Length: 444
Image (cartoon, rainbow, N blue to C red; front, side, top):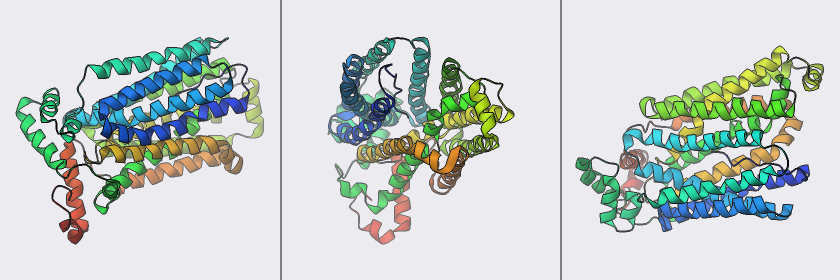
């Protein structure tokens, strides 16, 4: 998941544009932390209504901003809406989806994000001139309206209804997604998982849930630390070296080589998350991302200063420039089919219902905070390590992510949320038998 793209007003200086663009991410971090509380307080659907309203207000304010200061505030409000939606949306999908297609439905959620970014690239390419950026921004308010309308006609999740003591609505919600014969069994499983009542922060940080919390936060961190925003941030110069010499050509290359490939390969995750499982896609994807970034790093190392100057001046691309482009496209493809959608699938299914809102909020906040840091300090990293060194560092992070998944991630394909909860409880009892025996019934 990535923050919304930003159309640059022609009169704004570089520093103002950087601040306006970056303020979405801190807003999303705060929104993610609030989103967990809202999802537990007013429901997953209610939190999405709040996100839709906030998003609509933010987009209208930024489209009509008379001065850059108002734009700063509008971007912050927009980020709040994005952060709340990044928690409530996947959480709702995870709780409402049947276990046999839960991964695919959560990948569809990620596909909708990548496809929207692709459409944003296309729109930016079509409407470059004048003040057309204002029309593009105000049109985004329609997305908030669409979200509000869609969530009006669907019930909230059975987990939330049951947590509020509304068994009738919980049963009705389950009937919409689960075969009738399985409804009593699922109701009983949800009842057992929520038996101890609402959890406090002490339980979120307790030893029995420490492993899934570390796993969720780790996946959120690796999703950003593996370099996706570095690739996007540096796309214009990469495509310049690869032979796209005008701003228009670079924008077209970004649209298709990043936006188009990202959307297309997210569909691979939609097709195979519930067939192959989470672990295989993550392991293959992280390994492919590492190899791709090595290609990018070596390509930059092979480019001498004269070749870089020639590429920028409009000469034919060098062999290194061509391999650079291949490495970028490969990286985006492997990212889109693996950790892009799969991290959010796992994060939203590994926590028990009583603490899911808070744990997903923590993982989401880690994601947005890391994205902000990578974006904020990317140029400083370039100055310190050089182009080749930065992308080699990202490749090393992909290898660490591969080892992290190999060591700590169990397969959750085909399991109900309650079965996954029981898996962690069994693991906690095996690791700390005396501590687990001391837990009250329903929380062990």
